[in-house]
Length: 319
Image (cartoon, rainbow, N blue to C red; front, top):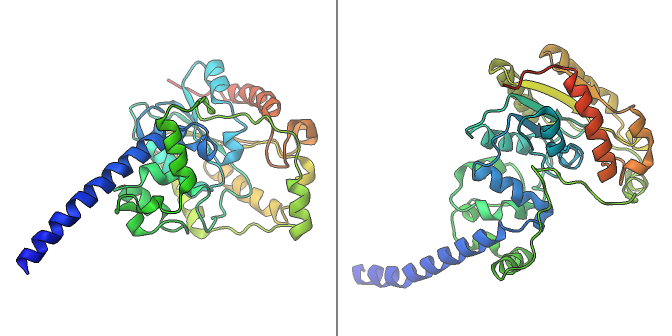
C-alpha cells in the first residue's frame, strides 16, 4: 500500500506542477488584455496591484463606468479620482471593489455613488464571469463574494486550470497577449466613453415584456445601508448621483417611483447630497444616448462637466 501511494504521488506531482504552471501562464497574460470583458481587467488589476489610491472614488454599475469621466473630475478638482464602475453588477460586487480600494495607501474622502433602479436588485448569475478568471486560484475572499451567484464552484478556486475548461475565448486571448497582440488602453482611471449610436435595446425590451418591476434584494439593501453607516462613521462623504436616463425609457420601470423613494429616504437619513438628473434637459436629448440607460461619449463628456459644477457647489474638503 505504501509503495502504491509513493508511486501515485510520483505520478501526480508532475501533473499538478504542469497544471499550476500553465494556470499561472494563462492568468498572467489574460489579465494583461485591455479589451477582453469590456476592459474590466484594467480595474481589477489596479485594485489588486494597489494602483487606485484615490481620494475620490466613483462607484456604480455600467451607468457609472460609461458616464463619469474620472480624469475630468480629477483635473477639475485638483485631486485623485478613479471610476470603479462595474458592468452589469449591482451593489454586492460594487462593494467588493470598494473593499479592495479601501485597503490601499490613499483612503477615499469622497464616494460618488451612481445609483439607479437596479442598484438594489441582485442578479442570479455573474455578468461577464470571465473577468474573474485570472484572480481566482486560491482567492478565498473572491470565492466568498461570488458564491451566491451562479457561475463557479468551490473546485474552480482551488484546482489549477479547472476553471479554464470551456473558456476557449479566454485562453485564446491569453495566447494573443503572450505573442504580443495589439493592446490599446480602453479605460482611463476606470472610465470608458462609448462611441456608439442609438440602438434598439429599449424597443426590444418593451416588445418582450411591456414593462419591468424591480425586485429589491433584502441582503443587498442591508449591505448598502451598512455601507452608508460606515461611511458616516469614518467621515467619508457620500454623494448620490442618478445619471441622465433617456426620458422615453423611464416609464419602462413599473415601480420606478418607489425605487427613487428609497434613495430619497437614505439621502435624508444620512445627510447625503442627491443629484437626480432624471428630468435634466440631457435626459430629453436622444443624441446623447446609445440606449435608454447609457449615454454615448459626447453625452458623458457633457454630463461630467455639468456634474463637476454641481459637485463644486458642495464645497467638499478633499485634504
